[in-house]
Length: 314
Image 1 (cartoon, rainbow, N blue to C red):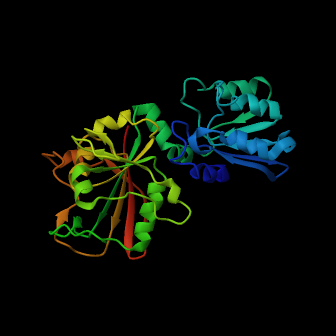
Image 2 (image 1 turned 90 degrees about the vertical axis):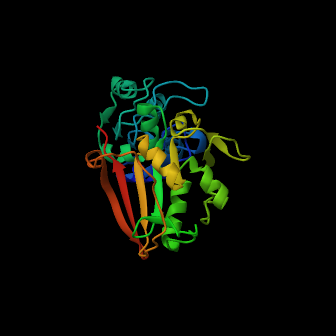
Image 3 (image 1 turned 180 degrees about the horizontal axis):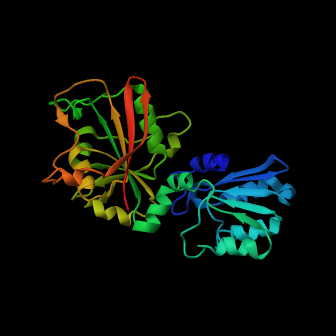
């Protein structure tokens, strides 16, 4: 399942509105097929893995990070039917599919023909991997990551506006990898006018993974998808992962609206005494600030420290 989860990560930010799924087919302790959801959502991971396995799929075990789909589509057959036709003997599933067209039907269909099914293997990891798909299903909006690159004193620029570069090359490379894992990236009008950011992906081999550019603004701008308020992210079609990069007012607006699911905090070992990373969040007491975020990851990127926090939701 760990291998299937790793394959699923290859597709993150490229498959909306479909989930990014990974699949590994094993026969006699040998991997005979690997697959992950392809850009645009098809072929599905199971279809890719079965095509690679061929006749070796018969009697094999399929490890898949999400319950195989059980509904027909003009774009391809249901994966449940394909697994049955391939003759697999067992299917190991990380997470049940919340899509009402499948939800439990895939598992039931496999079991009805005598295929052994094991569930909830790697479920927590699969939920992290498919956070965009699951957030869209649960809340009707994309999974939102807010990125902040600050000094030790929480500044994102000098007092005169100079901000290049606060963090070093390794942290910036990691931030570009994050861009490649999102369908869209958003900045505010002030950042757009001051920096004219390209918001592209400057990593060798991933240049074509640049996300769609979204602008939080009251007025249109050529070459940008505009939204007037943070809540309008729900209307962004084909976007299940949204990266918010700035500036301070935009970051505060998304936090105030409680629309941030994940924080990427890059902190450089410098002091600036300049412009803060956030404006007023509307808090009048400290109590609501506590218990909202839990640390998910922390690491050093050269001399910079990355901390990843996730919103603690019921």
